[in-house]
Length: 281
Image 1 (tube, one colour):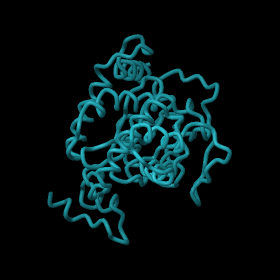
Image 2: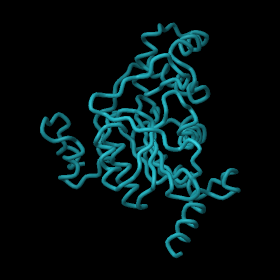
Image 3: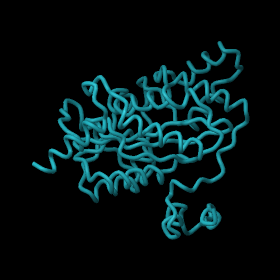
Image 4: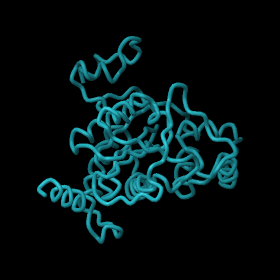
């Protein structure tokens, strides 16, 4: 607890991530006060999160209709703000694609027609919104595409790139390097903090095409599993409660939950068995 007090979130010279490194505190252990939204907005965000998980092609206009049918009087501007806050973007093609953040680079999608044949051939990552009883956080994960094995994960109260970089670096330390790393075109992944780590390890960078729901489909399926099997059936009072629950869930997902697409095996069985064979060959 004393280390947490030593972190200065408003320090103009040192980022929170750097301060945590200097005092030996894992970045994932530090959380600024949770983003505050009134209870009405939290209810709307809960409903929108569940509906978006079911129908990721819903945009703000359709979401307004959906909420109105449930008796919530909201306008599109209000819904658009909440969707931006939650990181929800309709997968339906739009007339004008979004412009990358200044100084960020968007890389081509490398997986179209590409046969992924083994663990560590392709890794992927994404961010999703996770509700708490009186607030919300964001969850990121790094997954091995071939085996569905969750290599690392981290939560944050903001959508800055620090927790994404931290999850990536942890996965690299624990599991080595993939040939290709795939993400969407979010600013957390197009910025130099993230891509420089990949380039320093000579990992090829792949990014989804705009409005292409199938480009990062494996981690989208992971989010559905996490939410339907864990998040939507529980209420978390604190970030610590959520962290403990996710730690238990991801252990279950990796080591106990069989996947039909893996022939009834678990992600850990596929990832560890084939990785071991490659290392001893």
